Amino acid sequence: MPVELVETKLQGALPVHLVARDGLEAAGLAPSTIAWAKANGFSGEAGRTLAVPGESGALAGALFGIGDGEGTLALGALSKALPEGDWQFASIPAEPELAAIALALGGYVFTRYGKKPGKALRFDVPAGVDAARVRRIADGVFLARDLVNTPTSDMGPDDLEKAVRTLAAAHKAEVSVIKGDDLLTRNFPMIHAVGRASVGAPRLIDMIWGQEGAPKVTLVGKGVCFDTGGLDIKPSSSMLLMKKDMGGAANVLGLASMIMAAGLNVRLRVLIPAVENSIAGNAFRPGDVLASRKGITVEIGNTDAEGRLVLGDALALADDEEPQLLVDMATLTGAARVALGPDLPPFYTGDDALASELAAASLAVEDPLWRMPLWRPYDAKLSSKIADINNVTTDGFAGSITAALFLRRFVEKTASWAHFDIFAWNPADRPHGPAGGEAQGIRALERIISRRFGQP
Image 1 (tube, rainbow, N blue to C red):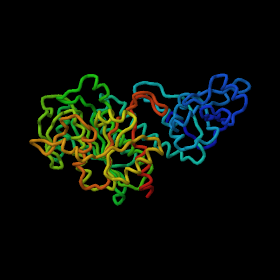
Image 2 (cartoon, one colour):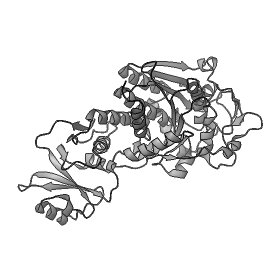
Image 3 (spheres, one colour):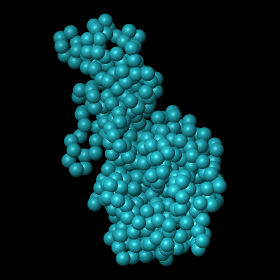
Image 4 (cartoon, rainbow, N blue to C red):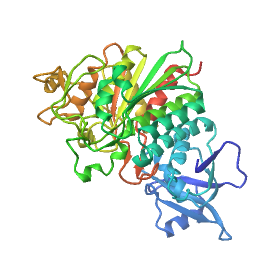
C-alpha cells in the first residue's frame, strides 16, 4: 500500500490541521501559523494543502482545507500533496475510519507498466480505527482498479481466470471453470454464443469460499474482457475504454477480497462469465435467437447488448441455490451514464429493506449509489415476435431500466437480488483515486454484508 497506515504512535510525526472555509481562527492554530496561512492566501478552501514552516524554517506541519464539508474522501488528496515523511492528524476527524480509508485510496498508483510508485508516506491512524480493516478495504479497491486498468492484451478471459485463481489461492477458496464448447454441454448457451468468436475461449469461472452451512452470498460479475460490439460494431471512439467492460467482474472480485480477508460468516460464491465480444465468421448475429440456461429464448436485436446475455446464464445458475443475497455488477449500459453520470451508479432491487440499507451505507462510506425503479410497464418493450424476449428495445428509451428488467427474468427464486449498473472508471483525477479504473458500490456492499453476517 503506497501510504503506510500505522497504529503505533509515530515519534516526530508532523500534524495536519483540517481547516474549514474561513475557519483559520477556529482551527486552534498558533498565531504564527495563521499569519503564514493569510500571507499565502489560504483560507480553508476545499482540497488545498499548505505546508507550514517552523521557527528554523524546517517543515513543521501542514494545513488542509475541508471547505464547506465536501466529504471525508477529499482527505485522499493528502496522499499526493504532503511531502514524504511521517504524519498525523492534529485532531481526530469527524469520520476517523473513512479518513484513514481516504488516505489509503488516495495513494493508489497503477505501476504494472512502469509508472513510478507514489510518495513514501506513513500516517498515524486516528485512535480507535481498525487499521487492518482499512487495509482490507483498500486492497479490495486496489484489486478492482488494477484489473480494470490492465489492457485486454494482458487481461483476456485466460488472464481473468488466472486473476481469480490467484485471489482464491490467497484465501483457500475453490475454483472451477466451464470453458469453450463445454458451455454448451453444461447448458450455458448465451455465454458460449457471445464469446465463441474470440481466440480466447469463453468460460464461466466459479469461485466458492466459506463453510457450507453459512449464509449464502453470491456475487455475479460481467467479465467481457473487450467489447467490439460484435457484428453491430462500435465506432472506434467507443472502443477506447472497452478494456473496462469487465469492470463488473473486477468489482465483485474486489468485494470478494474484502469478505474473505475479513473471514466473514458467509458461504461466498463468485460467478464470472468471462468472454470477449469479437468479430469472426462464427460470431452471433443480429436476428439470431439464442437459447438460455433458464429456458427463455432471446432474439438478438443488437450484438452490442451482450453483457445482459452472459449475465443471464450466470444469474440463472446463481438463482438455483436461492442465496440469502444475490448481487450482480456490470458495466451494462451507456443509458445509466446519461441518466446519472459516471460518479453515481444506479442499482435495482425489489427488496425495499436492502435498498434502504444500500442508501444508508452509500452515504455513510461516501460510495455513491442511487436506486432506480424496476418499472414493470417497460417489460413490454423487450417483446419479440418470434422469441420469448428481445435483448434490446426498439425505441431507445430507459435503456438501463430495461436492461435490469431483462436480467430480472433470470432471477425467480432468490428473494434478495440487486443489480448494479456501474461505470468502473474515473474520467478525471479525484482526491481518493486517479483517472482510470475505479471500484464503485463495493465499499457500501462490504458494510452491509459485514453487518448482516459478521464473524462466525
